[in-house]
Image (cartoon, rainbow, N blue to C red; front, side, top):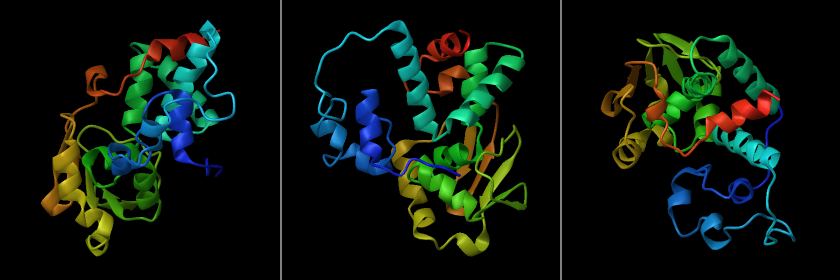
Length: 208
């Protein structure tokens, strides 16, 4: 499947906001966004008043890049969110949050969503006792996620306790880092998504 393979820091600079695509590196002085907090390219420093469409597009791109979703995938998520009962924007964020790769990242078993996606693809996790390797798999309330016994010596999992202690775990999830286990206690609510996102702009963009 096609994936963005260029510099991750360019994406943060393009969106004008830290997306934490490189995990812990984004918290250090080595972060490129800290040194060059303006869009990439020779015209990056030019000031230009964005149109309403440009603002909506940038918000959609920001969320898409934050979760590592391709355009067609993101559009399909929006259609599912629109078909569900409730607020479309909140439904969209809930669908993105309950992706398996995002849950693995939020539990602290990976340093970034990209690393979480790779670990899932390589079959290092079990969902309700069964091995899984599909990052986009939707988890539900009551599901249990566990690092496979033979995978627990992988360095990424050895660092899990430090990551969880530093980053914290959302209230809708429960983690036992010593046992390499996690569980979904409830469906995520809008307030559980702490990253600054204006989902209404995305709804307006796709509703045109």
